[in-house]
Image 1: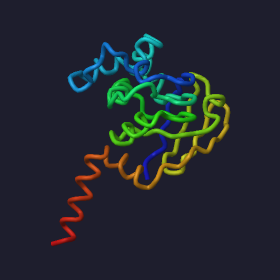
Image 2: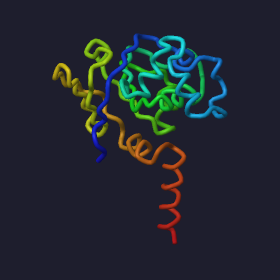
Image 3: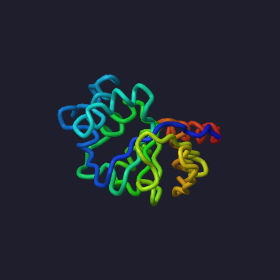
Image 4: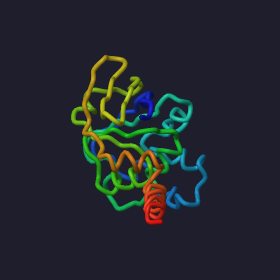
Length: 177
């Protein structure tokens, strides 16, 4: 059972597009270093975000509805957030592509109704992924997110879908012998 994620929150609004998370000029995410990916995170929405996130001010992004929508961008936005040191995104809802890319790449996300009204930028949160319990340490408010499936938790624990699949195949091959 992993330790709860404790970090400062950075709140964004509704309908934050994938290209707002990682602008087009940072397009080739597979060729970028971690430092370049970090600079990409919310570069146009808030040029100070990356530096503040890397300094430890923000480790959890809190959003309204439809976070990460607006296109079929692949992993870039997930990698940009991870590069900036973000450990988790909690939103009222996610665009389908962002949600799958996050889990597939071992990046935690939670869906939580009311989160964008309950958290302000700078407030410290404690989040237990196993129970989907979110505690706002500034206010004491506890919110219940939609729990992740056991398979999603296993994929996250493995570090992503590819390592998860490799482990699963190795276990199956070992059992077959």
